[in-house]
Image 1: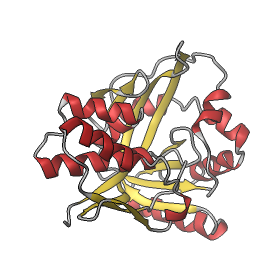
Image 2: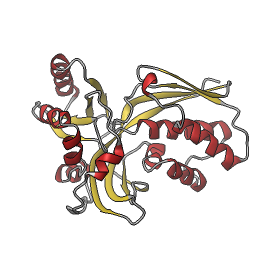
Image 3: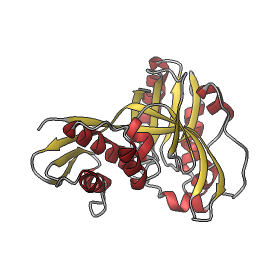
Image 4: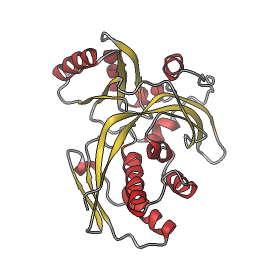
Length: 275
């Protein structure tokens, strides 16, 4: 088998935490967008999961989302999980860019293509939601607005494909749970409707302050990104620690990437574009 899918890196252009629900989950409003690049997942004839790539060693294999997606898909279709996967892990782990969720979504797309199933079918979308709040958006991997836990999706128009994008991670993992636990509990207002860039610029990521309190280098990254020419928007993605900036063009993005890499060679950078 040589079928393969990119597990596109996810970013949150804005992320508003509105309230904590009785079940412990948080109701959010967010704008999902996706980079052109990400992990690479391939179907293999040999069952199981093999992981390669620069971040393979950081991956916890015991409860991997790709394996859970395959098991869930087998239960859904009533067919044994005969195929396996090769994951080229190119994105940092626990980084706020949906690495595991994107991997699971890519697995579902591959399995759907193999079996001639539309990944937009309700049963597949419900399986995606059971795997994690970001997995339904990653299954689509196109700009969407997320509400509820982030899994109630609506299409978004007006986000320019090909927009220059730079991702920066300090190579420090940041777990989601502690960041949400340090959220101030205050509803700072809804996310605007309409043009996604304007809404994002007028919006915020409510998880930035608690993430910076836990990992102050995030504030340093945001300050560096914001200070470069041609920046349209600079923000932390998800619960961190990855931050991103949208730039007016590739030239401005590449200049920022070169400068940041020279001063911080231990950080991870990915110059890319919105898909």
